[in-house]
Length: 233
Image (cartoon, rainbow, N blue to C red):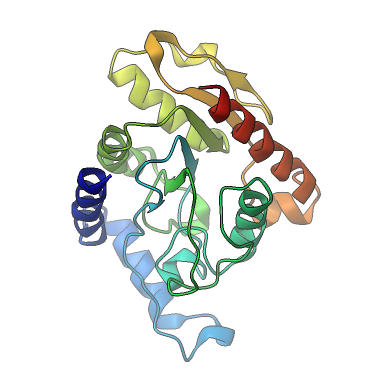
């Protein structure tokens, strides 16, 4: 665990110092200057957001990108917005978190047997990263997965996250085609070449949760299933 912790700590430093995507750098910093009115007295993180969780995790969770006034403000993935409220409550209900809320980096949240990262580490305009930006961030994802050697299951939150993870496996020669793994909520895939299995979920974006496309019960069921799957590994 000490080695994994040190490797993740070094990767975190590298991630937070990244300026490789000019469009994302400009956008993340502009949000931190303009701010949302309710957060006008707060200092925004406005940097790339690193992964967060247990270095010994068997469950790896991959989201899309930091929220403009959530993780881009607080500096911790899925923290400080409605998406995080949905996600961390579900993780708590499934036994992967010590508390159901995530408001800031000093709130005492601890993940147990789970680690969370984003496909793109900076907030993109309109929550739509460009293919080149996803590709640039893939290097961080590959290194993260290499450090998290106990990973047995990957929960992907949305189709973009699924595509990003499959691209890693394709690049590594661990799958022959991404077409064999279409996205749908609740889709489960046993993988080739001993790669971690995949469980897919709709992303807990406000667009999905406010319309009822993804309910708190649906997300809880995903992570209860994830708990059972990692226990079988």
